Length: 90
Image (cartoon, rainbow, N blue to C red; front, side, top):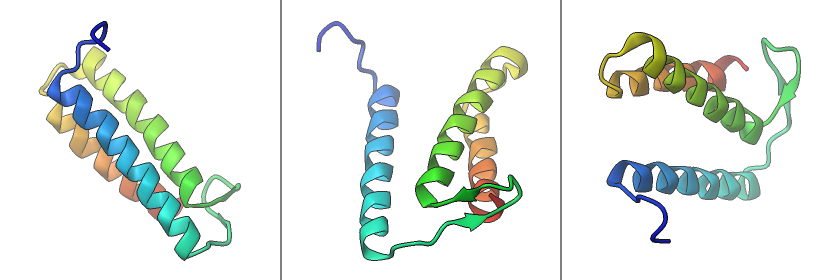
């Protein structure tokens, strides 16, 4: 894969996504969950909330880059707060 510039942040990003998928798969097998209805009015499971979190975090980071201009680790803090809210109320 010499065509792609694998930097440490890129590798950490993909490794984190892989670990999250593995952990959520193990959780789904060991502790099956019934869907719950949150503020969106739709039934969601852990996997659905993870997907919503990842998608929203991507948009938060893109908006942060385009509008805020501060250091990117602060966007990570915003994403963690967003993730906590999604897993709590969605």
